[in-house]
Amino acid sequence: MHETRRLLEAAAALSTLLRNASIPHAFYGSILTAVLANAPLCDEIFCIVEGGQQQAHPFRRTRDAVSGSEDFTIVHSPWTDRLHVTYRRQIPAVEIEILPAGETGPRHLDTSTVMKLQNVPFLTVSEFIRAKLNSWVIRGSERDAQDISYVLIRYWNRVDINRITEQDMNLFVARNAAAAPAWASLRRKYGM
Image (cartoon, rainbow, N blue to C red; front, side, top):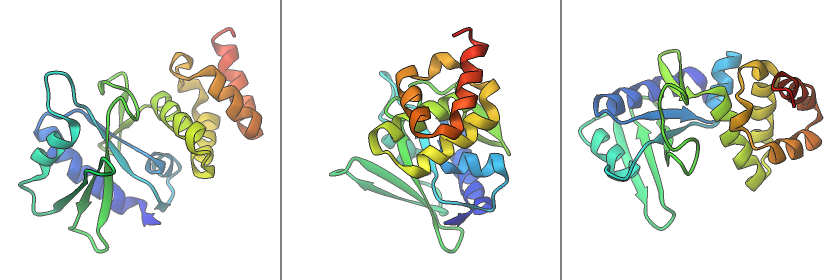
């Protein structure tokens, strides 16, 4: 577990480098629920970075943006296809995993898929639930279920139901009954 404020500081520093390199990005993970809940501790932070057909791979773009910074180091594991950026200004250091847009979260990161909280770009509530739901379907993680439930219960009125896979959410609420009323309210809102 890390202190949420330390993760936000690392996210803000990385965001500055990516923004200066004109790289669309958004943060994702339980850091979002920690920020929304004003929780002091958090255990998960990822940065989704956009690539594209005319652009280099998100990992290359991130390496290029971070390469001149004394505060960050990069570890690329080609055999697992993972890229980790470590913010070394703090002790202990903060590690942020870089994820390619489209594999996790939306393919394009723009004002319709990204929101700012405490001056740091995060996935919108709809995109966060969609990405967490996809992870939950694959891994069945209790942590993912807690994050989905927290955000859905408190922010259901801000969710775009068109971005959520109905079959996956029906399975989720069948196994996580606390989220069922919020899902029912969202379905009523959209006349379903």
